[in-house]
Image 1 (spheres, rainbow, N blue to C red):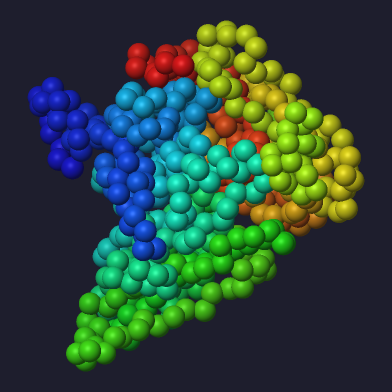
Image 2: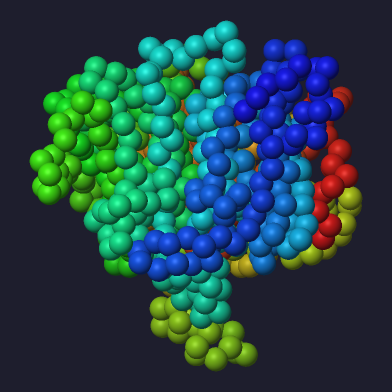
Length: 571
């Protein structure tokens, strides 16, 4: 990326691809994203895979805190597409957030849209991905945010930095996979492999020669920016014989702590330092599933890359040197996950919102729709002739199909949504116990919850045991939030409020709600717009595990959503 001065602004605007314009201390970076079908060969088979600029994963974007990104997305694929900048606060720039039919209508085949937004007060690792159907299976990439120029990391500067994107690969067209599941009402086929930076690694067929190699020197420190870009699977990640120092997550710094393994839900990022302190050799990096839903099928395979010391001795001719293999937790090791998550702290005392204005209690979980009378048995292949669904507070979210929620809200279009999403479950029950079958069927609808600008919000996210309990990674668009506490069983305000960390809770944009457990988060609603909160297991958002917060404008221009851009895609 080249930087140019103000005098070259017009030239820079014409050279849209990867050109930065200096404006005061910050820069403006221009990129072109061409979404297109590209031949990609994995697991011995070539697929016409949807990519950005012919790359899988897509390009890594690098900026400093305070910089602006202008990304022109041209859709040359045969599917509708949008791009979401996962974890970017999008302060007043909600039109650039990207979820289909929430903040914009999709970019139709042959169309284009330019996303414009500024990074404000965020440092670390975020990422971008498609937010339309299951395109994010292959349309994703890293977003690296470095400190403002002239400032530094709160830890010794690493010699190297490497994004590590954990992904999920289907030996099929992912759009066909989700369409078949939608047609049958059953669960979608699980993936065929996991990937590290787009490659499955040499434990899979036809994958050895393309296994990713990450170099390291003896004595040096390396920053790994780990991103879970998988569609439906939480993942453990480790490196043989090495320990991690965790220093950040979701573009917020953390109080450093050491661990031999990390776990990320889809959507989450974790920054770790690794030292070249082992005998020079080759060591496997590996990721395996954390599967908390009992009895549910999952892809129980292992993806690998290789950490290679530059001074490692070359193997003798004709002899292959197999890297050292790490030991990973069992796929259902919830105890390791819990210990890891409970180690997260902000580096210093933080200003946690108090005197709560909005206290929401939201159940999250699965459900089943009875087979509609006009559906044949082939369309009701869920348990006992039903169709799978998912819900929050017994409401299964249905996206609009002809106008986005933000456009309907701003333009006063009637009949698109209602503002009666309940602040508490309509029926109280033993959420993590034996749930009555009468509570398994939610109500479909497009209900939103309105928040006044500046309101202090607490949300208790309560997992449920409907159909099956599992860990849900819940992501809120447009906001970071403090995680005050997590726990198991039913949240008990009399007992569990005492567990709240009001001193140095971690700041995240995606929180794991423990299997048959709960999480409590807080934030100030100081970003006007329409903001999706959903489970980042894509099968769950497909089934309706979502809600939209409508945050009203405050007073004056700086507390109000910017006007929609002229090139917002037509509906």
